[in-house]
Amino acid sequence: MLSHVERVQIVVRDREAAVATWRDLFGAEKVGEDGVRYLNAHRTTVQAGVSLFDFLEPSGPGPVAEFAAKWTSGLYGVGFSSRHQQSLARHFDSLGAAYVEEKGHLYLAPDATHGMPTVITPHVPRCAVGHIRCLYEVTNPVADAASTTAHYAELFGLDGRRFSHIESKLYGYRGSLTLFNPPAYLDRVEVTETFGGGAMDRFYQRRGPGLYMCYIETDDVTALAGRLRARGARF
Image 1: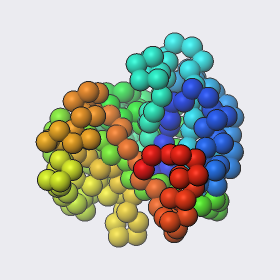
Image 2 (image 1 turned 45 degrees about the vertical axis):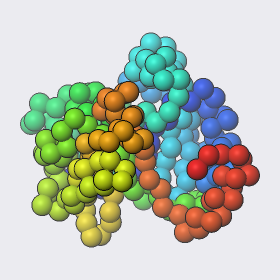
Image 3 (image 1 turned 90 degrees about the vertical axis):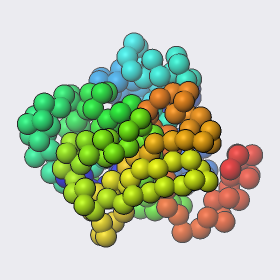
């Protein structure tokens, strides 16, 4: 029932500075300025490619304030789009999966997605802007990849037979790609168990299950590398 990885949510200390960074690196355009009651947060939204990026600052006590107090800033949550929003809501109801609806968006309860705050939004076709194509993957390190993969298949109405096993001894993980609709497109959650003391394993040992990273697609990696160098960014 999921269409695409539609957005990521990022807790920041300065939303306008974040907008400027995304504009310089990805050619992003600011498309929204509002608040999210469920998160008790101010939100600035930019579009790059066909995807959205929400920059969040706490407006009072709540999950974003708790994240900021603990980690200062960083990747917070993910948004998936669906062409079957109301059917998905009824599916959540049938499973007893708690969620809150706000402005037509479905915010899942924190325990539903293994430390990865998740919002479901109606699918909206967009014309691409800037220097990238899209988001297409988020990574969720967890304690048990097999059970989490099965849970996501049930929760989101995905066909587990179309998932792809992954494993890397070099980077220290094993798990699955929970592909939404292959081969038409390759949007997915990368569910991993970590080992070996690499970067992802250190993240998991320090923070537990959560949103570790996201992937974007661009037609010109060399140009993006040049923009990163110009800003003195690490990569």
